[in-house]
Image (cartoon, rainbow, N blue to C red):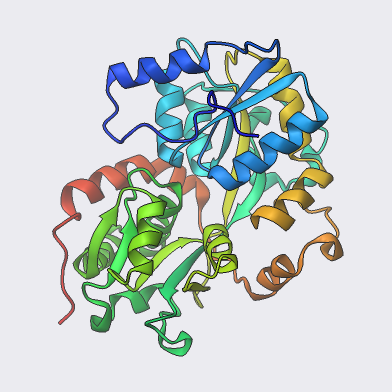
Length: 356
């Protein structure tokens, strides 16, 4: 059962100091029923967070799982803001590129769960600071009530087709790890092909010219796509599968040139108020039963390589059969992501180049 002391909404974008104090005072208030609070900062959304809260508390009745649901970049910003007085116990979810920045900033504490060796070395952070838990897949999204499948974009470049001018909706990339990864892929591809970033920023300017709006959050993105205020977009597979299950008209296609698969990580916050309880949760979250639970009920692909394919639900086996991973230099994205987004915000947003 969801309790009033669970914070399940992010503070508005432009958070004020007063808003931060209110949120932090609620998190720090403790449990009136004698249980130990365990606080997660996460971009994973209400469905997954509530699923794991209920499952973990059923096994650990002495723990009160609490969570703040916000964008990946907002999680990083908040943990960094609170570094002198940490309020979160666990950083739960977001691209490994953002976790890498957090590791460099000293925001994470080493912890090596027993399942660590089942995660590929490329999906782990340095010094056991974070580990990939799920694999997230950016995909092309379209409203099937207005766009037949065979006419929907099938690759990233298709979004620049003049037919989609003014019909593209994009989640604001400044707060979104998913969109930062896709934009980073475009820029990394430009560097690989030309040795420079300019072609990548030109591509993003053309996309900007196609874009009707950058939405503040995923809920608004889905709402506007459903109402056909826009017809096509880019987002992450999990949310679209959840919506499809609820009879939404939103559907997806994998980009034929490749998908920048995101290592969706988990880590222990440095100076966490409840470090032992946090370690226990991280150990549990990466266990095979917890991963199967999440795959079956929340459409997450596990990052562990030792999970038998036959134990995965049909949707996951289908996705693994269709997915073509794109080669992306995650170190390049981690090192340049912040600068790229600052440049995009300053020189690309609202300054798009229309196709001739």
